[in-house]
Amino acid sequence: MKNKVKIAVFASGNGSNFQAIADAVKAGSLDAEIVLVVTDRPNAYVIERARQANIPSFAFIPADYDSKKSYEEMLKGKLESLQVDWIVLAGFMRLIGPALLEAYENRIVNIHPSVLPAFPGKDAIGQTMAARAESAGVTIHFVDAGMDTGNIIVQESFKVNGRSREAVENEIHAIEHKLYPVALQRLFNLNNMH
Ligand code: GAR
Image (cartoon, rainbow, N blue to C red; front, side, top):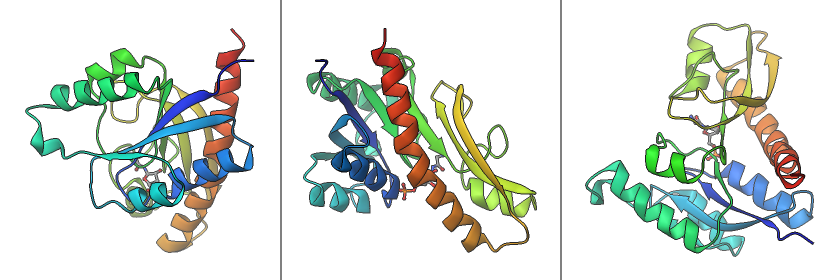
């Protein structure tokens, strides 16, 4: 029997997507082990969620390092020592640089609250509302050096239909929490077959 896929979840904030992934692992619908939660914000609520789920977390302050390269080298060492197979970005608000991209080529995934390529970058939901876009949605994609430009794995969209930002945001989160664990399970299955 193959060993379980080991993942590290990177998050900067609330961590509701981390929670959905951790819940799916616990329920047995996602066959993986979350070996570490990484955050660039030591006060992020995701740390409390990790504590409650009994999952180790690691917080670092990017400004304490000389460069992205130096903190990514540090993270890479940590992930490799834990034999992490995949990096799962769940509301991690920093671009991933060459050090991690090279170490985890095609093994970093991200979730983004828009139907890419529309509305990449920060506050995608705000951008969607400001543009009075007809639809909103969610994209799960591989991470490359660009801002939300990597190959798309799956997308789900819905019509805004004059709904408030809050309603749109709630719908996006509901989709995210359902879609991310399922997409990860499919991805890990595909990668285990060869
Ligand atoms: C999610 O909506 C995720 O799609 C978004 O941040 C939120 C994090 O929520 N990510 C991005 O905007 C990445 N560019 P969470 O902390 O509750 O999981």
